[in-house]
Image (cartoon, rainbow, N blue to C red; front, top):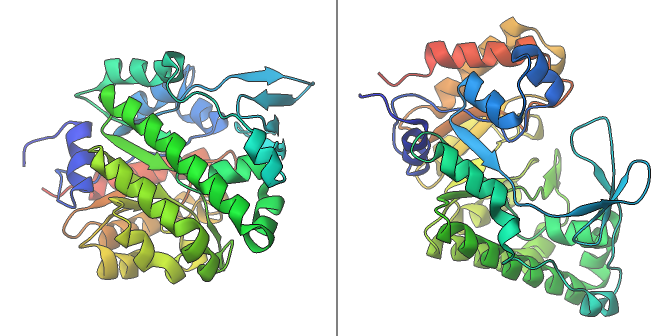
Length: 342
């Protein structure tokens, strides 16, 4: 098979076909890992280039204002606090009641400056690497606007407020998606985590009744615009796997091994309907294990994911700050040696 561009390789996988080799990219590689493996890299995009990733992850631009030593007020109205990681955490949120929601004005999804980073990535990488843009579906935005604890309580005590927040998230993200398509974007991913190691963050019943109608609507809306959609969520998803697949997603990530999501089993049951991305354990193995152990786990992932195509090798979430750089390097070297379909 002739060598493909990275963009061709990713698109072929999302069509559940065999590329020339298994592609790879990560949603995030922490700067401490980047600096060890790629000294003097100036940005995550430069790291992805120099390390041979098949995709570039592009983010929308939202303003934030410093309101303290390590706190920032987002354009969305929530406050984040810096952490030792590259991403802060939400510590205050603007919505607690329906009255708060009714007075809330979201950021304008049509502002041209919202898309400057995406446009720059498209200009530089289109035709070479896949440019994948981060959007949301139905959980992250409500979580930002209410806070995790209050949102989970509202799922039980104030379902109408939850439905209103879900509808807001769907409407905003479909408008953003239309702007992205007009600029030439082909692939989006939604990063809304809805589960943990033992199951969903809410009951399957509440997911089906409050979240899934909006989830289905936003995924179908993305598809109607012509986008490929990668759905990211950690955790044990078995209770809703059929629903996720039926929504029309093109790919599921990261098939979390510590949560009981066996890649081979997911491939056997759903590989004819969705592509898969994952699932070398980054929480335990890549953090505390040896390169030799990572090599063996990567070989297992390739054996389970590769047959018939439709597979992207990656970590089980991201290359966070505690991942040993030598373990990530071992995963990449193993992919290089064993990931070809030739």
